[in-house]
Length: 150
Image (tube, rainbow, N blue to C red):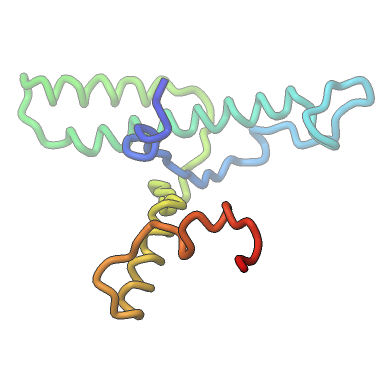
């Protein structure tokens, strides 16, 4: 399992927009006795949508990889791999959807609270024209105050 820091450094998320023909999906309202994921959508419909999305992405991945391996001479690994992809694509029965758009999601990394505090401290130091700021309280031992001295 990745730590939070590793996830911020290494995790890559892709965002895809798919167009899946309506005839491939059951879009009718769920039956009264159906287990629903949310109001108006049965869990079986959600599973069907996920399966069609996976099928569409798999076929698109095969097409993209096939494009990368085009034009290699016969007898090379690349040519044989492309042939395997062509055969695999020809065996896909029925229609699939298509990928309309895709991009890599890059989350905005927010500075930590200490980074922001350090930055504000640096800005204040520059504005005040002070070489170094002390971390000591303004009044040392002010919490030991016994009252007025006479």
